[in-house]
Length: 287
Image 1 (cartoon, rainbow, N blue to C red):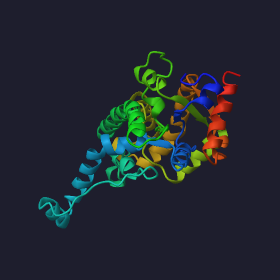
Image 2: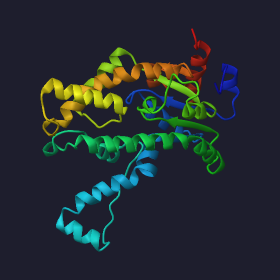
Image 3: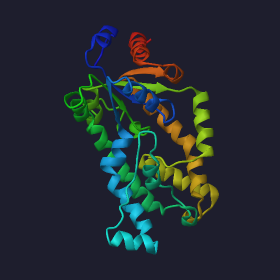
């Protein structure tokens, strides 16, 4: 690991951390809190995906929709208006909208093949965004003078690497530059996330094998044709299974770094709290 001991961590002039875990457990809140101190560069992988690697896809989707409205079509064709997404660290709605959900087009669903094509675009974009991390560590210090760096990874980080492969090229690259920190939730957190998702289901990235299996199982269980599936009903049905699928992957990744509890993360109020949290995790690692 980048920091093998508490002394290594405490004495490091440049602290570099990658946060990972289920979406909704505090990665972005914690990264934003550290950014506001003025000493930490906040690298949001989802933001990088949605701007650098998926931005053109997202804007093209919005333009195709606008071209169906005569007045907007005329303005676009005369280059009188521009259409772009406004992704922010705390608002990834344009990316979610582009990913979409499979099912009945009358309910906003996508044909399954198109849905899978966009999933593949996201997979490639997430890998590329993670590979950019080392470059942003250098940029954060060289351009802006930030001594410390925090990578706010996507909830699907565990899906685009092989946590059990010690030679996984992306993981090896990341381990050379950052300390991997898993934010672990309890069963109560998982239940709360499922309830929240049930109220407002949103698109997610899934491994293609998992997604194809779940789609086939849902069609068999409901007896519905692909174009009759309620998109929200399907993603609600798949969500808890996706969390269960990711759990062992997160745990395997944690063996390559340290683990902190979501409740502990929620109590972090400043950089000193965060540094103490990581010190405790290093001290108790392997117990």
